Length: 255
Image 1: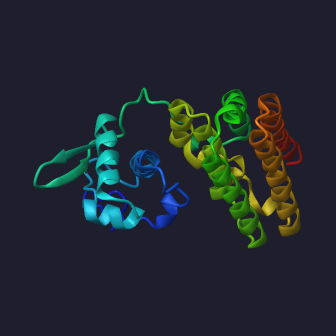
Image 2: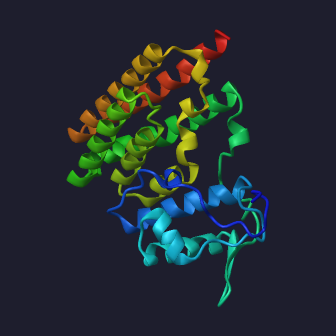
């Protein structure tokens, strides 16, 4: 069936929702919203397309009916879908154009990626400082789990984008300020710049060495947050994201 078919049902794999934190119902709903809205906005579901049933969505995302209903309610509020009682839920369009998003076509060049990293430096540096003041033991456990998953992915030869995103998302959760978390959830894994990196540009060994450096920087951020040192956390996050920005610039100059 064509992706443009108005009868398209959601059949994407669980990878679209990989690594969403399962112990926080509100975050679960946001994760479902992000995954489904991305499919609508990038055209995988055209206006008029019918969503799968609640039961099918529950099975796909591994969440409860309450989470699915909350997610669908949020999608309706954003004018992305409408529910016709007794019939189903249908895509109505691409939603409110005023909602802030960074689309894939806005990350097509190194300059675009650098601009996104500048935004992240502004937001996530302060988030790290607040996280150091407010983090819970559960937040620290989630960050440690993300770092361990990152290491495992690298050693298995994967790009570790999922664990990387989880780590940064958990920092925003640790602020106990829902606006930080909502912003990063909305942006999704597009915030991880190497998702745009040409895999042919480096050897496997070079890429693994690079990813190990990235996770070492994550470790420095976590140490500062665990130690409740706000200024050190801000500094470590700024260094991490600035290093990422400079890596993009250097890679561009070598092409």
